[in-house]
Length: 549
Image (tube, rainbow, N blue to C red):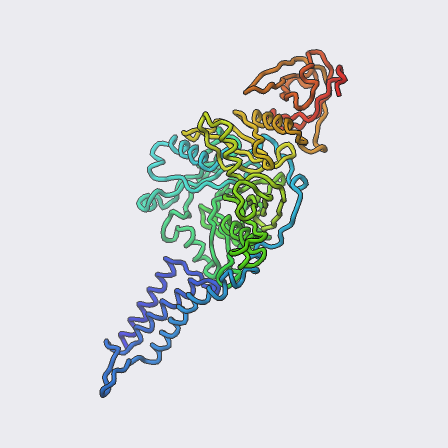
């Protein structure tokens, strides 16, 4: 009896240790529960056996001397193993539940590109990709003596902070020893503007108080982020996508997606979100509908990518998906996070037919909070094809393109990307038409690239729509200065007017045939969009001294 009691106590200690280390989900839709039950039951069965031997001899027959209690535990363990192995096959296999997998994304609405996606200001176009943010962040950390020896950059995530886009990453522990010697947490976080590579910030204080990242994936024991959330009321729900975000006051949080399985043991789907104050460890849980507005994304990229794929692949069932592939649609390689004019963020991916290499039938936007999904049937090029097209325009320089982000530029769906040299420095900006990837605009900055792109569109007879008619501003005046400049073989006209002496307007003859004939002293009328910070887009140019049609 004493042997059994010590055995049961050992099993209890082992179970608690397993829970602390492995964090099994105590939910019947997660196989980790059955793995845990199987291990505990088999151990209990072993310690319930009588004596050191399993076999006694009665006459000429050898019999297993197994008590009923041990048989019960062994039976539970074996049953749990069977459930772990067999149940997912029956309850979650795609060939048995393809329609459920296709429906997991929800209703996909077909919509119009120009009606949903407003034209973007040039100032808001992203140039800095994750790799560039890492390089700039490392350089910023290097400016603080000895800091890099104890901390390193965590993972960067792009997010909207007070209406501006930033890549944000925490400083995390470099190794176990550094954690032991810095239990008070690492120092602060790095912010890199996604639109201006010169804007890099190292936030170490807020309101005079030091910013410490105590709870993090690179910590241990009770400061380990996943363990901290798990042991504080989340043992029965899946935890994933630990994303570092700051609220609009700069307070650092970890945002953790709570998920469940909707198709047996498969079909992972977000059901809520938890926030963890990175300094205090305070945890708050929310439904998807009640989550704070500063949280950019609740739906993990991996979940949405899988659900978009299942929605397109299982359109006619499982057999069609693997044999005939009729009407099968698949997402293009890579997925990016884009932001709408309303400040909402969306997962973007191109949609192509099965077997297509460089063309798409359209693209899809999925709200990163609510999972509202819209399909835009806009035939065009894949992201990779657009990258190769941009690189081909400067092949003599050997630049490489970053993964593009799709915008509404001049009323056209447009891929925007940076072109970097071998050192990883941004050298040029490229705009590539989604519909026709031979239409490329290049420039050393966003404004030059936009003017080049506008000229490329005009040359192919595309209708250009800059901005929203309701937002256009009108100006009248007399030309006070007027000059032309040739850049990369393109002629651009620079001029000022007496009624707006502090503004320099820049455009080309694609906007108006009157521009090459215009001179100082002519009266003109302009329509333009002013995005602030000197960023002005001309919409119409009319020289009142001329009558050219």
